[in-house]
Length: 102
Image 1: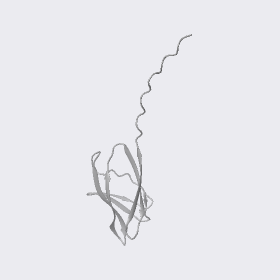
Image 2: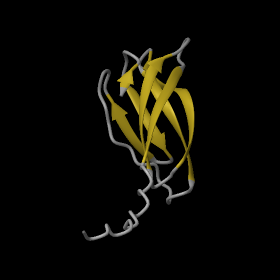
Image 3: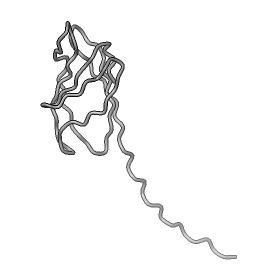
Image 4: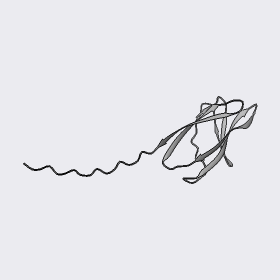
C-alpha cells in the first residue's frame, strides 16, 4: 500500500509495477519458494523516478505479507511490513478410553 503521497514503482529486474498514491498492488518477486529476490522502490520526484528503497526479500510458501510504503527523508521510502504465517496443523486427537458399561 503506497502511503508516500506520490507515485511509486516497484522494480524487480526488468519487471516494473506502478502504484498510485494511496493505491495498492499484488507483487510476486521473481524467485522460487525459499529463494531471495532483490529489487527497488522508485518514487516520483521533480518529474523523474528516483530510487527510494532497495528491497531484498526471502520467499516462504507458508507466509503472506503486506507492506506499507511510507514517506522517508528526502527521496527515501520507509518500508513497514506485517507477516502472516500459516498456523501449524493441530495434532490428531487420540481416542480416549472407552467408558465402562453399567
